[in-house]
Image 1 (cartoon, rainbow, N blue to C red):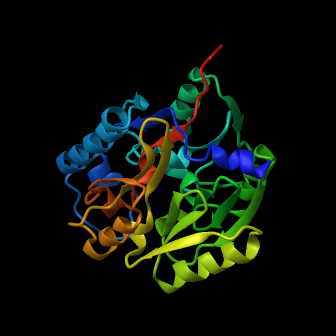
Image 2: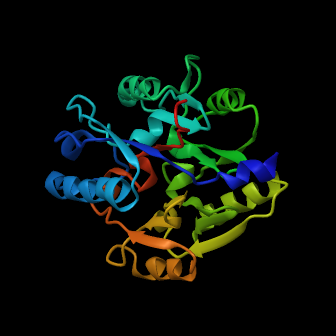
Length: 283
């Protein structure tokens, strides 16, 4: 089974994104106080959406920004999609719970099998969920708890689910992501390396790793598209010069650097801004 599952890893046809409200600047959650330039953030986001739609040819579903939800651009936290199933999460920050409504509607519109996390003791942010194509790793963080991980395991019964403590940083994917089938991109900090060690111990699969100097630069988007092959959306040399160089080792990949200088001020990373899915043609 695993070999077949891996064959489709990174195949996507659709992306769900959401606009940036002006309220992002003053009201979005953040771990450090920093001034956010909304105009610049929107420019970055437009380039991101352009890469998904025009460069890569995905069908992009754009949800409108909602001023009452300052963090709504970070759609990844609202849902975890794998195969035909979409789990609507219960975000750890109470101010973000309503973000799931528009996401749920969009996923139903795409005819996915939508499962909702209704247990009020559970919390789960999609940013804490790393799907490797073989299994799930779920970060136990300020935003995601054990009950959330259990409900995810129940929703995706075909896959093993292991939990990883997130000691520093907001989410598990604040310092790691997939860079290809069997390749984990990981930051070089001690907490990131410890988390990787735990993932390796939990798994019966041997993953390759690409270590980058900056934790935040380890958050990348990998795709395997029929017309483009291996694709990696990653940080720019302006943001993280040393880390950006590391991606050049991925000789088989089409590399797309995308700036994230504004959204990073409110703890946003590249994976945060889209929910990717592979929708088989409706018969």
